[in-house]
Image (tube, rainbow, N blue to C red; front, side, top):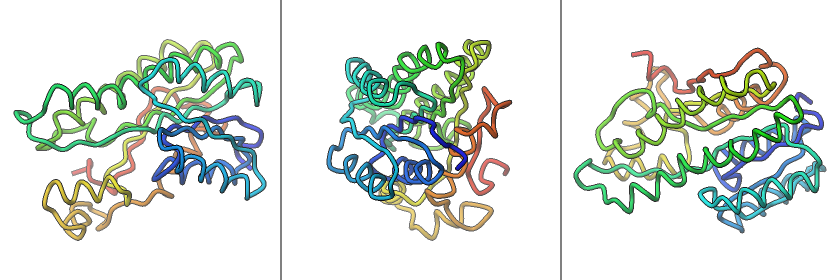
Length: 250
């Protein structure tokens, strides 16, 4: 029970890494606030957690909307009185050549992947500072660490998350709030299905791109997030955790 009685907000908790992490958190004793723009998926995750005998609520949430963030924080404090963990997980993926990226596409992705993380930190971290404790985990990507064709838009967003994490970590270190980023490679989710289609590379080719010979899975990412949310990582802030089967070591 590494997260016993910790209250955690997980954005994009309806599917993929967010869902798997929420289930892991519940098994470790956390109380969950699941948010997602997809009401059906988010509610399903919350109901799964409740069926396990753990506490969870669902809040429909557009992470790019500041009023929605205020509602999430208000409902979390009303129900659970505190906020110990924020996993800024929600995001979207677009692979496209630079010259073909429309301004509307740029603005939409940035509003979710960057503004969403900013707003989460803006509204949650002051609450944590009042408590003099808290852990924020921001979902970046290996696309925020090195370049790749068709990734100007997505890579820019994940690079922004990487450095915002470090800036926020320094600003809030004296207040007892830790902020770290995770940087997964391809993980077996719908996003990877999209990447396979967009790049014309088969799943086998994507697997072979990794020194370990395969993509990762959502459980492997969730284990890292549990560590960062727990007191086991109490001396860790401003760091980036790469979960990529060795891809960036090349």
